Image 1 (cartoon, rainbow, N blue to C red):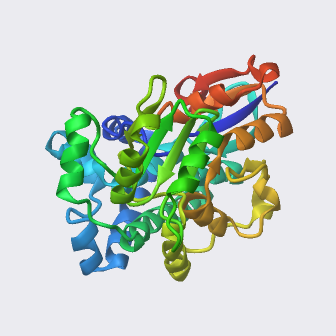
Image 2: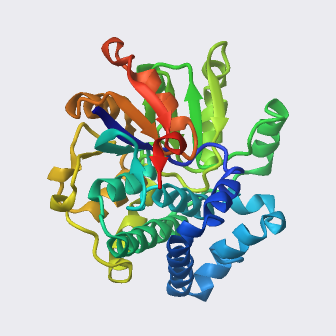
Length: 368
């Protein structure tokens, strides 16, 4: 049998395909039980956070059923919010993990998730065998993800972008994405980008962080949009020279940064509502951390790992993927999506001896 790693992508890429992909799954009769649970959980989350938070962050609520039943009525900006996009990513990924599905003819030996995909990897690693067990776990997992995103938006301090600063950026980047709290830098070696950050940091504490090292020359910075613009203008010569790229990501909070540490503390207070997460000793197969070469079967608290790895700690993707592939002796990667980012970065991080690794989408690998 082929030793298979399940791979889950995170946020940061295109979100306009999320609702169509979810709609296709929702229309399948054998997914109805799962989606009924999802809709119930989202209603409960909106009620739990209260009217003031809902009005400020989710004026439309989280009416996923309505969005899936009438996709033409969904405003394009709906998925621009990382709460909505993150919830949709998690719902889609976990749908593929129902115990009525199996990866055909292969041995799943490990799971790995990029950023928010970590939580789906944990669900995969727990391998619930009965549908009732799966639905309970899916509900707990979705409550944790949704509340983490809501609290992240509540607690992310933001310095307003000055209009002159915004006009200057738009003048030079007319067709680029608008400024946000995360920006991708491509074409610079890590040491070079780190040196720029060191020169830029304020004396009163960290303003920007190197939040994701996706490959040797693809990294993401997190901070306030205003501070990221300051950094861009200060180092514009280095960031716009041939072979180097700069692009703001569509995320609406600065994932993987100390700015979200207050959100971790608040979600810890919400864990009574979230419900108990299974312990690391219940992981039936290795699930690998993304901040260091670690197997989370040896962790202490899976909810705490999710909160810190997704909201606060940086992603060290080259270290994580290399360790996972070697430790689990992976021969094939089944890409559980929803985007191609995690798969692309795995390929870019592969050492010469691992480049015969096979990649396959979950749609081709799963059967009912």
